[in-house]
Image (cartoon, rainbow, N blue to C red; front, side, top):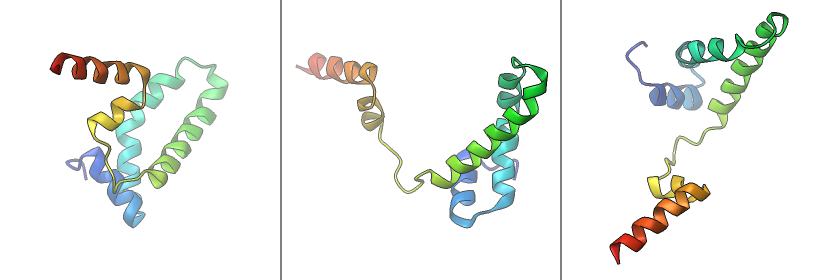
Length: 93
C-alpha cells in the first residue's frame, strides 16, 4: 500500500470502503495532524486528533472522485483565482 498515491487511496476507500486505504490516508496525514495538535493544551490533544481523523474519514466518503475540477474551475472559486483568469484573458487581447 505504501506505493499507492493519496488520490488512489481516496478512490479505493470511497468506492470499495477499503479499510486499508483509509488507514493509509490517515498514516499519510499523521505528521500534519500531530504538528497541528501539538500547539494545543495536552489534555485536548488526543480528543482533537481523533476528531480530525474522523473528519478526514467523513471527507473521504463524501469526496467526488468521479469529477476532478479543471484548473479553471478551481480558480473560479476564489477572488484571487478570478483575478488570475481575468489577467490571463486581458493578456491574450
